[in-house]
Length: 84
Image (cartoon, rainbow, N blue to C red; front, side):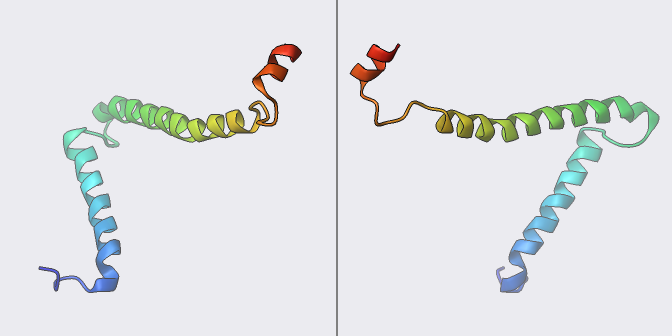
């Protein structure tokens, strides 16, 4: 079975097949498309995709800022209590 696709083309083949599979799922099972009766489904899908992208992109940003703005590790708990 491994001889069907050359070694250098396996990952590109998997990516192309994944994109084809995604397109089939979106059109035939989620009924997303350009037709008038499918526009509502498409808009809801795009809004959900945007929200997921915001959460996925925002999480590392928040974690990075939390890490940058944390209390310095050179301060002991006693010094922190005295300062507050």
